[in-house]
Image (cartoon, rainbow, N blue to C red):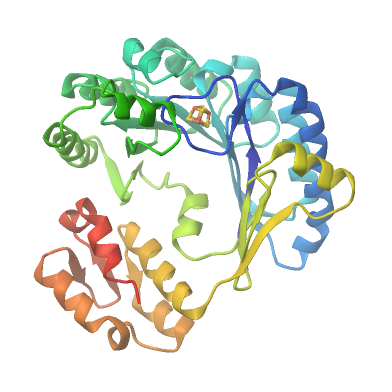
Amino acid sequence: MDYGVYIHIPFCRKKCGYCDFPSVAGHEADMESYTEALCAELAAKGEQLASQGNAATIYIGGGTPTALPVPLLARVIQTARAVLPTAEDLEFTVEANPGTVTLETMTMLSALGVNRVSIGAQEFNDAILKRIGRIHTAQDIRDAVRWARAALIVNVSVDLMYGLPGQTMDDLQWSVGSSMDLAVNHISVYGLTVENGTPFAREQENGTLNLPSDEAEEEMYDYLAETLPKFGFRRYEISNYARHDFTCRHNLGYWQDLPYFGFGAAAHSYHDGRRTANTRDIGAYIRAIKNGESPTHTEETVTREKHIEEFCFLALRTATGIDREKFAKTFEQEMESLYKKSIDNLKAKKYLEETPTHFRLTPLGMKFGNQAFSSFLL
Ligand code: SF4
């Protein structure tokens, strides 16, 4: 069976105010030894993976992969390509922060077979970008997309955020318009969540965060859901919109219950009914690999019950929804035998609809996704 590969680069130039991802700033001194460890982990597992089939997708995320100097990032990509068995139509994505790329970066990515870049734009208003701690300007985003195109990378995605401090509907409309001007093929949109332990959480406690009201945030959500399809973007997942067939195949793999293998600090893997996670500690990760030990920190067997729940939550995130036949084949049970009451409730609320082959969320159900997902807890 084909699978996805995720490679984690845990470095950033500076931490953004809202971010609780596993990433650190100011660790430039660790980049070389981290790259060596990562390449060693890839080489060690590459052979084992051959027996599992081909990697259909590779995704280098972070952190900020492009915070690595170009020769180090090139080494990671070359190693991945050399040691992993890959499908002919491999989708190879690298996340890029516009403040860390040049034409040289994009040219290197393209020359080494990267065919998709996901650019962390977030906003096109420089004052808001600064307010949320981003290191780039709107012009940097425009340059990054143009350089990707100049390097012949056709498949370009941007991430946008809404519900940001000081952000207005005008700002969001400007960001969407600016993304349209750049003719990107894919847009991911995320509402701000204030995560514990972040600078934004402290500002919220002090009353200085200045977030849009709940009503304003809901308007922003509605604006995105209504406007992006008018520009030819199909909403194929709650937070993801694609033109034509430029969906992110890697992320679709997560939502479709496909196996994946993670490499690097904090990377997760999921296959054969088991989920494992590497240590988040960069130093511990490097030491483990150097000493020939496993960097795995946690390991769990996914119970049947948990598997059923996750299968449903994840598939429901997609526009296609839950494939009823796949469910029945995977769990040797019809969905209705477990969820009849929940399905009827969600249908009555107009959150869920039924087709001959699938159960899927309606646009209203997507808006209140968490309520819908909780109905699938066993
Ligand atoms: S660039 Fe991305 S990973 Fe790094 S701190 Fe900002 S949001 Fe987090």
